[in-house]
Image (cartoon, one colour):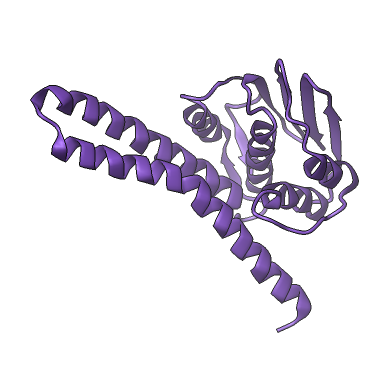
Length: 205
């Protein structure tokens, strides 16, 4: 096994670690909801069922988005942008971020652009942990994610990786940003990054 294969396997392990960590909260909440339901009296069962339903919906929304972002794609295949819009909507349904869409979310989108846009959204959301407004744009060859907030998280690793394509030591915390950078470079695309303390924009073409 060559060095490049070793790196790919190591990176896959780190992505799996991140994925497992992100999913663990929702799965634990479902488990807690089941236990709460079993131990509840009649008056509390409705509250337990609400908790269970909310946790299950949250877990499913994460899984659907992560399948697009981290799963294998058939390059050149035409996929549904309307379905992608629905996935984003469900993912942010109970989130502090308000999202809106612009561009074309009615016709198809190339599978590789679908995966790229999903990772751009996840990356932007990771920097907008205090809430705000996010706009997701599908412009065909040019796709972008922009956001405004009272405060944007300034992540030196993320900004360095995205601005300079400078790969630092991989960790579960920066693995998704590194994946995004790799998708951009492997696709022969260019990233325009604009970020301040109150706004950000990721644009790829």
